[in-house]
Image (cartoon, rainbow, N blue to C red):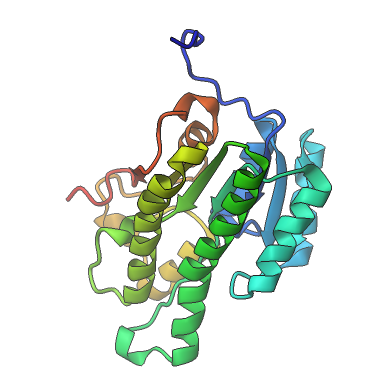
Length: 258
């Protein structure tokens, strides 16, 4: 048997290369900082270059290393270029955080075809294409890897509040995590997902503007803080979860328990 440390609970990511999508705000911003603080070299990506530069400076000030790159999750060439940039800057990506996503915020029958395409491309097609590209390079390099896909509690519960396609795509992300875990287990690539409830973010700010204070309907009457996802993220990226793959972890502060 392997001689594991006691306890086998390390979250040290020294020497790892982590690409994070949707890093210009919200959860992706926090995830990038957390991974860098754990020792990974981080490739934060997103569409707003000014925000990426700000994040790079913050990570550097905290003693970490980041090589940001603009990415458009609806553009395949942009995704391939981001992986190329990561390899040229830091080496093979062995941690992928598929966090980028957009809400639809409209009733299904009122959505334009353009919006339908953008939600599908950003929330589901883009993460799938990017995952396959990262896996392809890991397999060629004979390296293990970790992928953490950000689903949503909305993948499992929908109350008709006008985000049907968001719910559908996030359910797709959860299932994608399960099936790609099976596909790539033989290559030691672990694929898991986190399904957050309502956490503070720019996306949530927009929802609160439309719907008012939804926290009063929650058991603990509060939004989650992105920091409350740190431990789950690090567990799924770190050595302690080496036998965990194909799992969706719900982190919703009891919001869906009623």
